[in-house]
Length: 348
Ligand code: DP6
Image 1 (cartoon, rainbow, N blue to C red):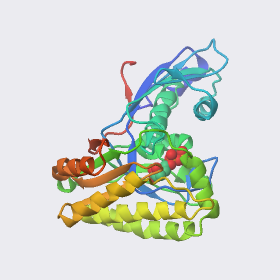
Image 2 (image 1 turned 60 degrees about the vertical axis):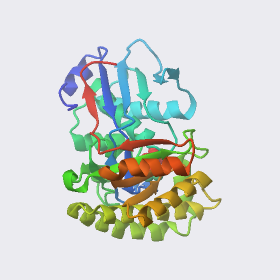
Image 3 (image 1 turned 120 degrees about the vertical axis):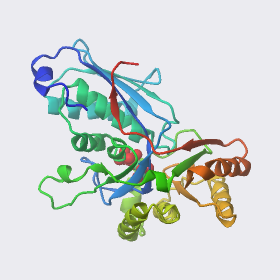
């Protein structure tokens, strides 16, 4: 994938290289919430997600030997401050590995809301890792690419792959902890499971508190954090078995309780982190109503008020209709399992 250009070409001849990649967001059914190593972005727990087929991010990385600083343009607007710093720090890591110092122009386009708990950093850093790795001539197999994407944003490790994906936390006593923490696809009989995620955007604006800060505060101060990590291990085992059986009810039930548990850790942080809004709770009520009416529908929420409802593809229309009726003006999108990150042949 990214290994087509030999690393030596880029190292010995720093001519402008240009690569464009696309990646999709993923939604965790078993959440990642909390780092044991902030610099290497190593999580406390394993997590498991579904990559979506909506809201792709496309990123172009062009090496520019003449410039002194990286330029980062997001949806046509030059970035500065922390968002720009996260991209340039990531490029520094790539440059260090490529043994190059050439700066780059990064242009990225997002088709979904940014920073609203809809996994834009997952698709963003998976696309950036794929494009930057190729532009700087790194030889990366998908596992190495997943490790690299992880350094930009933890959840991006999972967007390297399509479908259902498990991200291994790795072992703290591993000689090289970086090596043990990567994502890999989980084989699932999609024709039997027929999963859909109905995404209800109750608020498309960026969150007040970035998830990175919220995560740190939760780990440092919530008395429920450790118990939640313990319950995550049982949830993951149950989830893997449920996926193996293609048992959507069990997948949904475990996903919903895992997400609610994560939000319980946030609510008990000091000071409390509350991403869920009254509209979120209204949607949760609608999901409960759907279940009472016999529809298999289960909710999951990330670092924002928006909700994703897992259901069977055949029920997605009915679920979408119920969510629209519950919250007037809500934007509803239906997603299925999507592809992993990939390089594009031509720049966009
Ligand atoms: C709630 O991957 O955005 O969406 O590693 O600090 O960049 P950083 O965090 P990020 O966190 C995602 C948290 C989550 C749950 C999940 O996707 O597993």
